[in-house]
Amino acid sequence: MIEQSEKRSLRNVQVKTYRDLLVWQKSLILVTNIYKASKSSPKDETYGLTSQIRRCAVSIPSNIAEGYGRNSTSDYIRSLHIATGSLYELQTQLEICLNLQHLNKSNFDKLYESSREVERMLSSLTKKLNDKRTK
Image 1 (cartoon, rainbow, N blue to C red):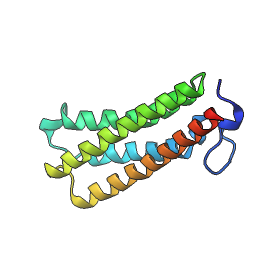
Image 2: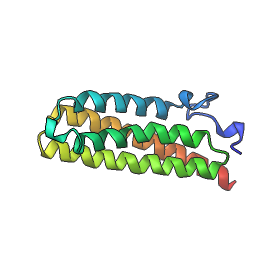
Image 3: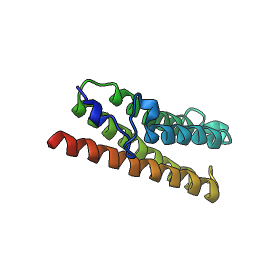
């Protein structure tokens, strides 16, 4: 079971639900922006790259939320690792979209920087949970 003391954000504010996690909030904004940016993708990519980039983006906050609701810190950390893997997949697909000119450089830069912020937050949360687990 995850201890109440572990359910704190990086700012030591009491977190009562996954919705209170800043990393979940930021990743949800990222998903929204991915959907907006991918609206202009070529129609022939609807079931290809567009679908894939949307699915892996949705997977990030979904896995954060799922892990938060798990019964153990180990399960929570495992879900955060899955979210991180989905984030790396998203970053790769953003690069592909840029290379194929499905995204302009300005949109790419904004989305990529947002993904890097989520990446840093996921890394920090995972490290914090690992440190508490090993104490």
